[in-house]
Image 1 (cartoon, helix red, strand yellow):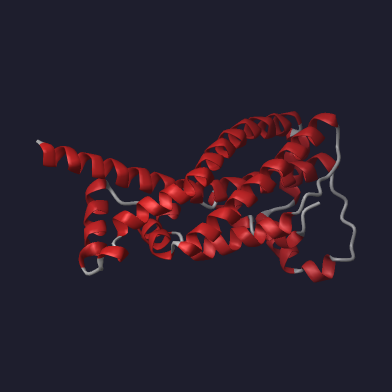
Image 2 (tube, one colour):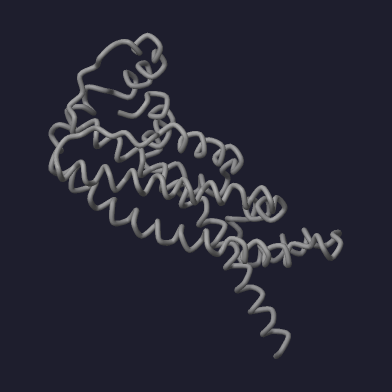
Length: 238
């Protein structure tokens, strides 16, 4: 089973109604803190899972594989971002900008910079270095979507057990339990195996989705910048 400290990190997701990186939150997220938390969770989740049945175990194994692949890609992404700090910072701050706002931000960034520090050429270098990471991330997004369907099937087939477990663990009780981890460390709490496996699947999918989304945001902003450059070039020609 997952460590309780790991599960605590996903309480925010549950309270928000979905993933940590949804909607408006993604536009204002503290990227550095989010990256740090995701890296920490990657290290803590591990590869153990609760055995239940052939079908559920198969889904758990696939989700462990996706988690490990996504965390590996995320590690490469963090290394790349640290080497291209200016670009990573620019992309993070401007991820929610419209085309016009992004163009203004780019021009403002470049205004007082020497040629070798301007953002345009740095973005191109960053993109060239990150293409392989982006490609892997896109493939993982597709795998995550397929696995989400498998998790939904498991949830529907075990709806009564999952609903019963949720009812017995009100948010207040869950938060209290998490805060008393040291007290409960030696206690054996009886959990229905399929419920434990489902919670593990959801935790792993949330981690992978959040890491995938964080990388995708950078890719989307870079593509937006490239499209802007094409539009500007066409305007110059006409």
